[in-house]
Length: 316
Image (cartoon, rainbow, N blue to C red; front, side, top):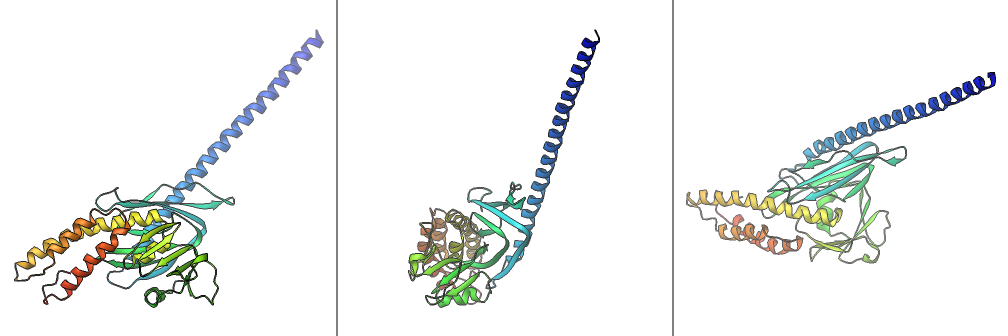
């Protein structure tokens, strides 16, 4: 009888230990799961705040009619930014959105909530990462100012045999990640070759006279300061922003068309109304950056006529 009691007690004690271990393990699992969720939630909030703060940083890049602006954007930790774009969302101008992720425990954690940009045109690789980013902006005219293009990059670039116009255009911005080089100078970074010089080993090829940039096997046609957007962008981001810019041109063109009607009542004959109307129609139906070359011819004609107009009768 005593043997049976002791055996029963031993069984109950063993069961209690097993139950305690299982219960403790379950509680520990719940605690770890809850802590992980709290960390992930806190991380998402942090990354969302970081992305939102970047939009505020980009505000000063509006240049007015200035030649351009530049600065560095620094993060405390290695940060990865993911960008995307749609020319159809948020009509009529389309939108971009991006999110951020930073290194935690030696690997990038989850992205924060997307931050949407409607009134800016950011030309960038789809994914960039680092602690230091370089950003600059240039105004884009065709023929009047449409917007400022903003370029963000985290890599170093070597511009081989760049034309003097390009050196003069962005050399004064003192961009720390761009080195102007030639065949006798070696520099590290992404190689950008102009007009097929040293192009065999170049990631980016610029046909400056033909006005296109070839990257990732795709041609991106440019006009004016869009050259820099093409050099620093993923092709899909670039093409999307070109369409967004043309959407804005259509809206601004409509405003200038109304201005033409008003100044015609003041004995002014701007002589660009018909040409502007044609350009608005073409811009609203572009299928890609290739159409910029045709639009550029329209733009030059309109700009010349406008510049030669009588004082007080110019449209822009």
